[in-house]
Length: 356
Image (cartoon, rainbow, N blue to C red; front, side):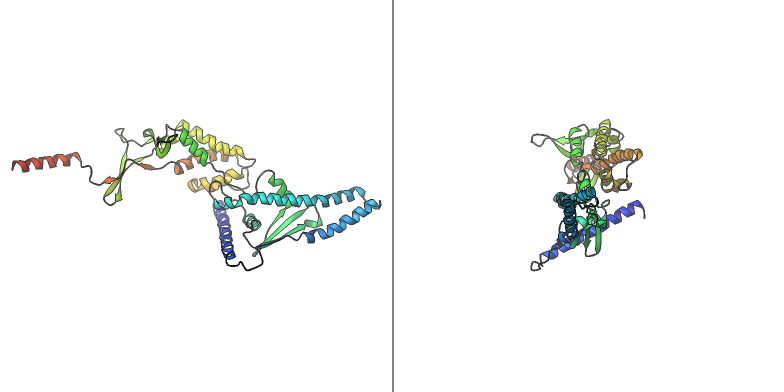
């Protein structure tokens, strides 16, 4: 499979999981009489039972000065005590992720939403489980019987989902969420348009400030050979037509103001994060449908790839944020304006009829 095919397949799997969430949520409406919830609680007693005995025995040995290695014994007892805080912190970090998870899912694959291409299917399933949206259970285990290797093993109705080490989760949470969100540049794009009155047409609607019309100024409308604005007329049905002007995107792309401001937005993304996950997510979900150029998640970008991202952002902006054409005036009847030759012919015919 090509990189594009792998990314699209991962997106399909995550979308299928979200469909499953919707199904289970819908079923809950009809199962109010059932006692079981979708998520089974963690059995902490099963985890701590052997460590409670270890703690008691080591404490007794330390008090009686019979510990073979007092330093190791004290460290192990302290690790057991500290593990409670590790679990508490991990639960808080899961909670902070879930505070925004619902909104991220609603905007999935869009700006401000979760990256369905780059988020592993297992992580997507795990987060839906933590959110209480998928049936399953969770086990808290000390891997290799080591209290410093606490991990949640998550299962759903299909089987094992993912193992999450609590210390790694807590370390990650100081820097980022458990999932990758697609950066939202809508505000920067709109600000650029509002400040670029030379390019983008604005209109005074009686408010505090002019508003964008969605079109461009006359300078950036395609011109005919005689220098006039090129007009194309389209049939609107019901014997009505509409005049359109064509936006000169090539002229915009050569504008110094356009290139300067676009570079600021894309370079700002590249410099806003510790890694490249968010930039890659933006490229694959937002830009790639236009450029067909995809980046591999969880990888650093080369300088060449960074520069291509900056240029591709401009290509995407022109394709998605600038229209191909804009209506000029209101729709009008097809034969509202007759050619001058026809007007003269009608006038001659009327004169002949008058003489006769």
